[in-house]
Every structure is written in structure tokens, then in C-alpha cells.
Image 1: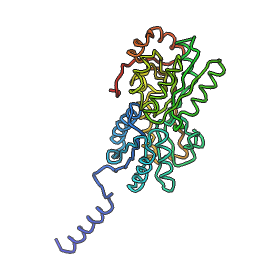
Image 2 (image 1 turned 30 degrees about the vertical axis):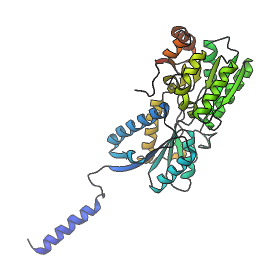
Image 3 (image 1 turned 45 degrees about the vertical axis):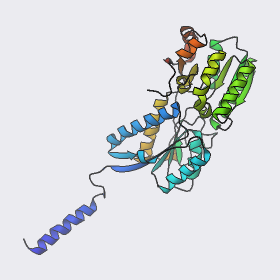
Image 4 (image 1 turned 135 degrees about the vertical axis):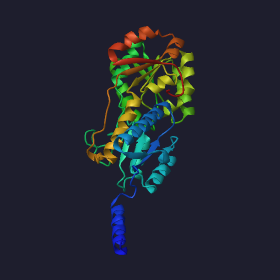
Length: 341
């Protein structure tokens, strides 16, 4: 073969190789920054199901969702979350997943002058939190999944179990936007019903402990907490006090019941994580525009009863199930543990 022919063939081979993607034979890597507000059972459950579904979608769509190198936990600290946001921007990730309202708000601010999309998860009220102009069309480079709570049903559950309750404790953190609306809704419900309520707040586990002591001293008949990460983070530290006082704790997520509260009510957080992963794929692989991608909401209707706590405070499980059934799509049972299996 002539040298010129060899050169031509070699040149053609090089041109063909140059026309191929730089990672020919390898799946496209999509860098997914995951920012979890704090370590507790609900948010851990979301992250686990999010990662599991991303792995499934990667195989289905022939890409590699690299989240392992870009996972951060903010430990409920604003300064830490701000630094995480700056780090993810400098790492030029393809998308940021922010789990819980405070994390989403800080990531939104960090990415404001970039084209990095944000997908939030477990944001109870995206509009009030400033994360969406409206649920059907967020209008910004951010969308996600909401764990909005049906506060009226939560209140109905309290009085279905104890029609004679005349004082209800409201336990939450003022630092969390997610708690603001449901607490106002609870007050309106109780005012209309003519039932007294006592508010106590805390921004740390120690403060939540002190708030619980104050509610016990006030002699409340039941305590309501919405989907509040601060109280959720403290539940394992407070549930035994409430058991000793015989006070049922009604909360806005099943993980509260897992960590010792009498009852958690709301959505399935595993489903929430799965849906969040699917939104990540829609945006990064299929090119969906976050500004026009509706926030996904879910039916509230699953009541989770901690059977150990129910027995300890003298509530009959079967009687509670009968009382709650008209207000719930499903009733499930747990015993106290730190994490979901």
C-alpha cells in the first residue's frame, strides 16, 4: 500500500474519531449537587429514594448521574449552607437538588446569577417561601416537589381521638417558613372551635426541649407540630417526656412517629424523593424548563401511628384507627427507631 494511501486512511480515521464524543463508549456524566438541610429521618428517606431513582433513570436513559461527589449536609446552619452553595457553583454542577425549604432558599440565592437549575424537595409552601411565583408555573430557574400539609385534617385527627381536648399546644420553630402557614391555619381552626392554644417555639434541640417542658407545665391535652425540621431533629430527645406526661404529639410527617411521636400525618416521603429524581431527569436529560415545570404536590392522607407510644400513653390502637379512618386514605404502624429501614 502506498504511503499516501496509508496517510489518507489514517487521516480519515482521525477525523472519524474527532467526530465522536470525547467520552465515546462512556455514559454522559450529569453532576447532581444534593444539599440536605439537616440529618433526620424524613430528609434521609427523601435522599435515599432520590438517589435510588436516579440510579434507575441513569440506566434507563444511558447517562451517569454523579451525585456521590456532590452531596452536602448543611447541619441546619445558614453559614454552612451558604458555603455549600458557593462550592457547588464553583464546581459548576449541572443541577442542584435542595432538600427542605431553608436549603432551597439559600441555594436559590447562591445560583441567582448562574444558569444552574435548582430542583427542591420537601418545600411545604413554595410560593410563600419565594421559590415559585405560582405552583403551575414557577417562573424562575427552580421547581420541585412539595410536602404541603393539610392542617385542617391534622386538627380533625386531634379531636377525633379526644373530643374533650380543651387546650392544644403548638410546637414549632419560628425560623422555618414551612411552619408559618400551618400554624396560622391551626390557630384559625382552634379559634373557630373555641379551643385554647399555647404556642412554644425553639430554634435548637435544647430550645425545643425547653418548649416541651413549658407545654407540659401548661397542661395541654395534645401538641401539634407541622413539617418542621427543627422539631423533627429534636423528636428523639423529647418523645419520652411527652409519653411520661401522657400527651399525644400530632405531627406533619411519618418520620416524627418513627422517632417516637404518637402520630405522623402527610405524604409518603419515599414517593417524594422518587418524584424529585424524575424532575431532575426531565430537566437535565430531556431539557424541561424549570420556570415552566409545575411544582409537584401529593395527596395528604397517610396516618402513621407509633404503637409503642400509643400504648404507653393509654391510647387504644384499634379505637384510634376507627376514629381516624374517615380522615385518612391509609393508616400504617411503626415502632420507635432512628431511621426507616
